[in-house]
Image (tube, rainbow, N blue to C red):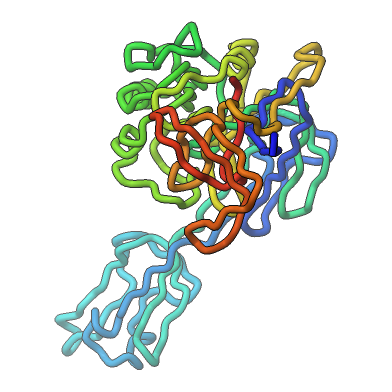
Length: 373
């Protein structure tokens, strides 16, 4: 077989991007159809029920469960403050009373005369949903959320950590083959989406986080640096919920890899412009890629060009996007025409990849994507 088609990461200087912003439970939607919103604008808000704190009041007061209700100083539905007395025993002849002070602030939700348990509900937790991208509201679902649409330049990465954020684009290097180090990070990058060239090191991530960079983007990253930064092995779970104070995106793969010149040049064109970034990644079923979104203004990149896949041919560079070779780069060295029996016992169309280390491996064609030569 001479060639086969495979998907790739989307890199385009113009596309229409639509995003649905939803609340986890019903609440208030603060926008209407036709409204123009910016990325940091709150478009919907609600309150989640607070944490539940069970208190074994019968044991705490050393009384039978059936007596607990009569000893409560605060009844069901009443609010209490941390340190406030909520129960008191009768004592002996009016003396030697025993009080119990609430360890939390909240509301008395239930008092059981069967178990002697008191359920204290913590304060409601405010939840706010931001627009994430600058654009126009095209649809509203009352009490649930809205849809925002805008024309953007759009870049997908191969892997990322950290959630949604936004800030102006600022470059830390001059060329796409320059690795980003701690020395490239400066105080004026606070609040910015900082672009590197080749490898991102753990030292550069820590330096960026220290000065308040919201996102750091580069071509490659060593898996050991990722482990050192997170403090644990990531595994195969979906990313994006890490609370590290910074979003990190790798555009090409793991290792000392240069950012594709087309991606670097596209980002360079928008230096100083606001970008929305999300590092959430999922590499198994329901693939999710980290993304960089740059809302366009009138006159920005009038013609659409897109790189999102192509035909596999001998010699083309690619990356492997699933274990056990996830993130490794190589070139197509053979395209067998017959299905191959995999380790799982199933059959699939495969290709032979010559890795950058010189090793040749056989992988399913669905497990690779082309990269820019």
